[in-house]
Image (tube, rainbow, N blue to C red; front, side):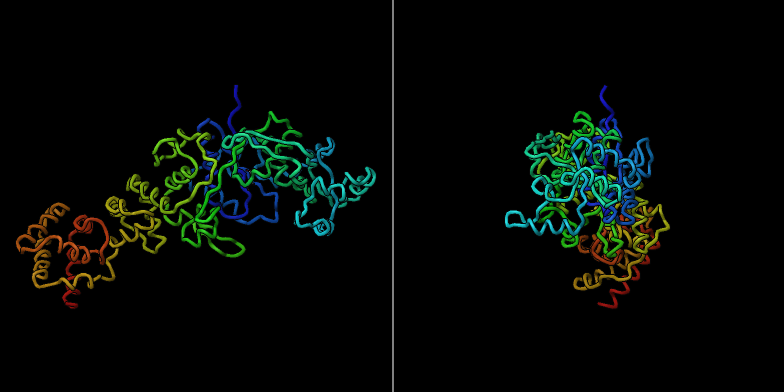
Length: 510
Ligand code: GLU
């Protein structure tokens, strides 16, 4: 029987969640759900110097907003915890010591000053930043250069030390990437990475291998920026657990912005979001815009992310989460970078707003109005408004411009757009329109349109010339859905009130 699929997203809580990070979550999630597996979130917080408070909660809030809930995590529990690496600290040392015993790792006692000195001393034009590697390790203060007695006495006196991997010289290590095929590395080119730090905390390299093993991860997917670390992880797998145990790996391509890798700065510069939700850096106070606050629907957000680097082989672009789960295939993830296009992202959102029923949009739109200090009490009216304006809204915040005039009488009327073509005929027409609308029964879109058109005919006026002033009188400007739909929803009393008031303003200006 094949093993149950178990995948993990392993973020370091160092800041907001970038588009690329959410796409990694999404592909992990889709793969797990497609294969009836588990999706695990493991917090990789071993680098305490990069820890940012609030980042962990933020990550979970983002996943909740996207509808990509993990099966196991710090917040969801599970049988393989703890799911925060700092809480697993005691279990890593034994693996590092096992590597030393087998000759694959060593203790290093070099101080920061000594490391600095090494970098200065061996710096050359060909090698501007010398690394702690097979060229230099025998010139440093470690258990390879010191005698066993010296090493033991340093350890016994608690001299600060780290454990480093001893990278073999001149070996090729390779693996089959699910997206890229065979990827190989020359071990001589990789430095002797620290595995266990002086404070006893593992580095990412040791922790990721040990935890993927202990958590029975079957597939490890991550961004391509982690590819250079792969040779270290491959050797650790071989030395500690055997290659058969190693998960299958896939490295996702970068998401590209207008100039190379999509960055936070691109977002600020070009005015588009790069994070899932607004993120405020607790140190600098700087806020990076999120898709949620820009008015994206979660369904649209995951749809557009899924298509940034994958397609199902057809022209189909709109996929629900269920359809994505059914169609997702790692073999169809591209190996080249995927270019992010904000206009296209908005197109996805527009399609999803059209596809979503008005009743489903009510809570979100209502919240958006509230955030804009325009609280809505008439939810029945809100749903009707959403139904008639949603096809014009690209982002949820557009509902404010397209719909707020239903709830609040316009404070300004763009009379400047009416006056140049205003005349006595039109003035009489609108007086009569107000009169006939007073008697309109039933108050329906069709009836209101009929009254207006018949009256235009009687006055020998072109309907086209009357609709713009009528619209401006009702909403304040040249926007909004069909003008008779607007009047119908506003109701008789409000429509007549607005027409009368606007008419008065026009006459003042005429
Ligand atoms: N902690 C790494 C990160 O921040 C995880 C890389 C991996 O998935 O192996 O992305």
